[in-house]
Image (cartoon, rainbow, N blue to C red):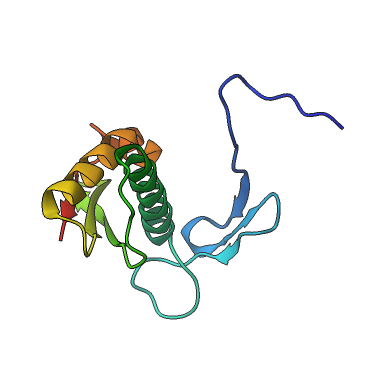
Amino acid sequence: MATTMREGVLYTARTHTTGGREGQSRSSDGRLDVKLTLPGTPGNGTNPEQLFAAGWSACFEGAMAAAARQMKVKLPADLAIDAEIDLRLMDGEYSLGARLNVSVPGIPREVAQALVDSAERTCPYSKAIKGNVPFTATLV
C-alpha cells in the first residue's frame, strides 16, 4: 500500500502514551516501549527529560557528523555528548533548561568548536528549543 508523504517530511515518529509521567509510552512500530516514572523516584522506568536528553544528544552528534563530512574531518570513535535536561519550577510554572557537554578527543580545539557551532545551528532539536529553552553546548 502506498503512503503519501507531506512535502519535506522525512520521518514521523508516532507514540501512544497513557498515564502521563507515571504511565507507559509505546511507539507505533513497537521499537520503543517504556515505563514512565517521575524524575528522582526509585524503581524501573524513565522520564520525559531523560528521553529528551537521549534524543537531543543523538541528533546533535548526527549534526556534528554532517558538519565533519563537509569540513572533511574524521570524527573520533570516542566522541561523546553528555546531555543535561533540567526540569525547573519557578514562580509556580514548569520549564526546561538544557546543556550539552561535548567531548571530541584528538581533534584540534578550534576544529572541534567549529563542529559544535555548526551542529548547534543545524540540529533539529537545537533549532526547536532555540528561544524557548535556555541551553548551552559546551566543548569539554
